[in-house]
Length: 258
Image (cartoon, rainbow, N blue to C red; front, side, top):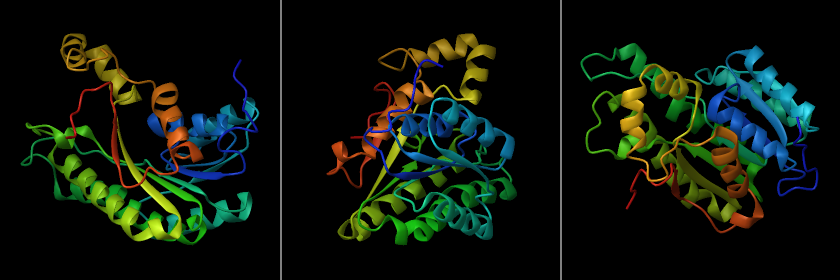
């Protein structure tokens, strides 16, 4: 690996807890924040995946720990936060990325799948924000993830997923208002990224994916680390110290948020 961690980077001395850090966007954010000097707590349901993320960060010269965590379980979240504070000394950055995604029309998605979507998305986000609040006070930053699918006129097959992500946006803006005086900034990103699922779809449905890419002004899907992760690293740094309560699409110009 030619890239090495900048131990004096924009996030030096900060500890970042990132859920769903074993692959895709979560992993890309973990890599990018580590490159700017942050200590990373990579949390995920599958321990082997977050261990692989941590191994790569350490290979680049960074500091990271792997945590197995089921974001749908309050006890698991609480244990995760306690371990991060004990092993890394605190939490200054929280990235709520983990999310189960039920795709399908409203009559096709089961109650159980929708409940899992809500539990892993807005409920987990709500719980983790509250659990991390005492440690974030003073100089903390929260980045939650939403989706531009919720901004489409035709949300066919995206309804339950979009509903969960819109709930996260509402929680985010509320936290920005209520916790801003406590020195905590809270923002949402809406990424279009080359996640494993997106890559599989593009490889297996090339004609559909080409039509999709034609709706992106930059004509490509974002790289999880270079495009999404690096933006998040800047958002969590002092360079973005006055950015709070915003929903920011990182999607090459596809979504119009108004």
